[in-house]
Amino acid sequence: MRLFAAVLPPPGQLDELGRAVDRLAHLPGADRLRWTAPPGRHFTLAFMGEVDEALLADLRARLGRAAHRTRPFPLRLHGGGHFGRAVLWTGAAGGLDELRLLAERADAAARRAGVAMDEHRRYQAHLTVARSRAQDVDLRPFVAALDSFEGTRWQVAELALVRSNLPAGGTPGARPRYETVAAWPLGGPG
Image (tube, rainbow, N blue to C red):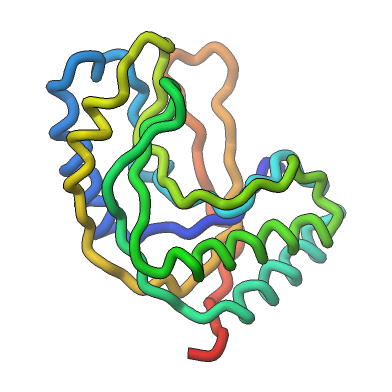
């Protein structure tokens, strides 16, 4: 199954982001972007790709330990950015050091459980808002419009293991479906 570890923002914070994203629809090129639906808005900590079911028990145990060793921390959705001309995102503010630590621990848990992970890179907190269908969309006006976005703070208290169910091939407009298969409360010293 196709899996990743994530922090899932609460519904209220996703609603705030949704209102900010709705205001971007009038910008030139908005019709050429594929907007991420609220169920797909999350902070991916460690993308694992296809994971053999034989590894799941060890992976779950290791992710549980990673969560237990990490204390809850404050976070809020904040601003915007882009990766090239392909991805528009909103960032985070608050407990970024703790978020990076949780990402490092989730990545290490997957590796130690035997999951074949991509090359390790420094974690950059981002939540994907849209992807470009064509490389000719200038994302800078969208980033500028998101620049002043400040979401309400919440306390991150859980690490989630999420399954990504890809759409059947050839279905126009189909999006992945996400399913939380396990979650662990953060529990480090407060």
